[in-house]
Length: 407
Ligand code: ASP
Image (cartoon, rainbow, N blue to C red; front, side, top):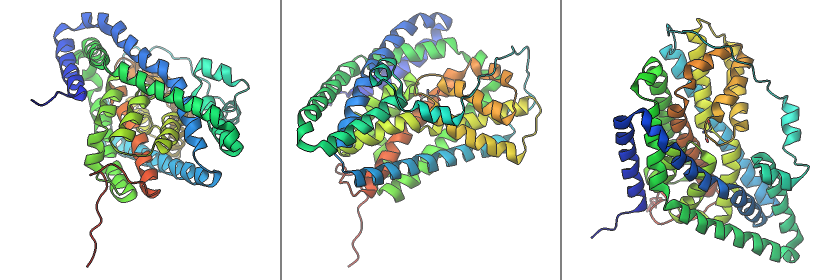
């Protein structure tokens, strides 16, 4: 008899969660604490795992390869993010989403002062790495882990005990991830029932079109843009690749946290796709921190949506500002539920679009967050595949596109 896989159980839990939430409605919110515990179980592993895997991953490379790989990763992160933003702008402009929407009584929202770029850059450098670890400040942790990794590599054999210790901690973290995975069906069921139960059809209907367009935009980005990058950039079979990491997308979709999902993405890319440990451990944590196509796509779309709702015409220069700020906002957004909405304020403010518009989308942000987080998660894995493919990595059996030899 065929053994039922954990992924299938999680999928069944997901479907049951949708049915249960739709059936029970509001009271399903009592399940939220169960979902919260599940997200916490994943999140508690994130800081030690990012720190240990990134530092040991980096230590495995010499400076030249590190620069080349980091450079490639950054190029693919931002090329795809700009394309995502253009898809968002294009779909929103063509569809005119938001025009004629009922504004009702929108509460005044206090603008969020965006910190100047120079402050953001200065703050990447931690003054106390222990504090950064305790506070979970991802950019600072990533910075310190990269420097530590480089230093271990430069120190050479004398750093072996430290490297082995960190590697061992990373491996233990992976085992803990496996334990947490067994709780996934319950966690996913609770999160989905709560989402469907509390965001019923009534809440969705006024902005149903925006939700639909965001999902369509994310789907276009995944099945068109990522398809092309995987096929022609990484040299892998796009659907085979996506099939092997589908569990990560489902996790992102259910938890709305690409950081919590990082652990799942890493395991799948190593075990199912066959990408080397050191590449996974360098490119994925970096991507989770600074690379969010789904968030960028949504932020541009919702900015045009709010402008249309307020009968504003956005000029070309305003749209260019949206492009740049959405890119920066997605870099700054942490991979936890709802942060995309907070950094959205920065985009709205820079483009001169009323912040009060956030009130229209606030209630259903979770539904939209699901699609953008799943996209963010796939985004990191696709960038990793691109780097791995161009670095000549082997991949697992059946993932690479076989070259037909000409006779
Ligand atoms: N929830 C998203 C993530 O974790 C961030 C966002 O709110 O857009 O990737």
